[in-house]
Image (cartoon, rainbow, N blue to C red; front, top):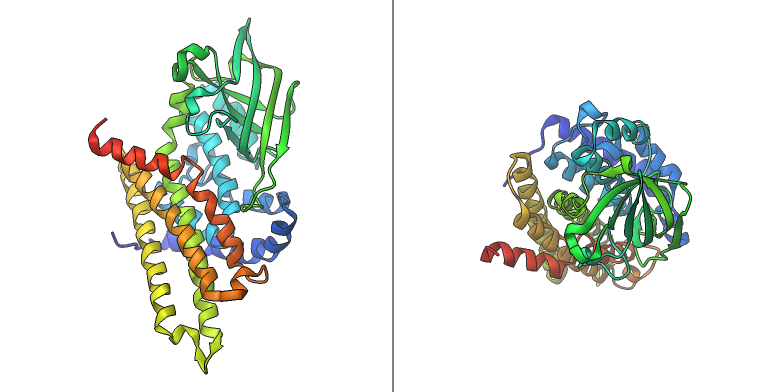
Amino acid sequence: MAIILTSDQQDLTELVKNFMEKEVKPHIKEYDRKGEFPLELYKKGFELGFHLLNIPEEHGGLGLDHRTTTVVLEEMAKVEPAYAVTMFTSIITFECILLSGSKEQIAKYSEKLIPGALGAFSLTEPNAGSDAASLRTTAVRDGDDYILNGRKCFVTNGGYSDIYIIFATVDRSLGAKGITAFIVEKGIPGFSVGKHEDKMGLRLSNTTDLVFDNVRVSAADRLGKEGEGFKIAMMGLDAGRICHAAISTGISQGAINEAVKYAKERVQFGKPIIKNQAIQFMLADMDMQTEAGRQLSYSGAALLDAGMKATKEAAMAKCFAADTAVKVTQDAVQVLGGYGYSREYPVEKMYRDAKITQIWEGTNEVQRMIIARELTGK
């Protein structure tokens, strides 16, 4: 599938590229070293609507289709993947409300999210990662409220969000059928942010635990019906995996750009190292793999835009693009040699950032299980 951007897509891509290069890139090294969350940089993105990419225009969003959204996220990730992940997590939060919320919930939370706010999607727990249906956070009905108790972990935007989608079980014996979704706002009694993760990569994103100690949530803030939480959590996975594939591709492309630039400038034995066939073949393989991942994500996005199922294609795109990001960034470090291992150059950070892509949004082992399941019809 050829990648031919429309004039509008080209203009949007150029806008994102210029923003990331001018507003974000100059600050990356500092925030990566400190492991701090650059909220002011994200606020600048809110002004351009980056937290509303594929939110329908009638709800205040940009109304981009899936294919255009992947283009934008890849462009962000070429410079800073944490920026793309942070914005995308807010989009997912809003989408959950739009897809499953009542008219009152949509109106209420649109007013909070559209002007510029972060959202968080909280499913994972210390003992419920790939096996999300085994979560232990409980929701006990108490009159017109629910009482939430439990702990979440690895929550993107956890420490800075205004709105959280929280998944808890009303009956552990029911497994996935007991999971229920709730909209929780920052600052309500009993709800606190726990440990902040000091991560290997993506250090410009915020990742925390969340703690619920007898948190009282109104039944009016339950999202969907009791027992529909797992369905709500799963309904956005195909689109999420395709977007995460685009972010992985952005990491790969950023690493290629840096490797090519360095190989043209680095002179050894009287010539730039890019003239050595060993380097050329390495760069060629990096480029082929990255393009293949890009095509997989675009193909999956095209299916979603056509209203078709893309479960297998989304898993393939996420898995392949993530594996590629790790391999390509590793090879980029090799092209730069000793300098690639130094924090003076950006590829060592890209290598650190890439690893999480094989873990988030369902590990790559789980993606292979999904692909096999789709092939066997089970």
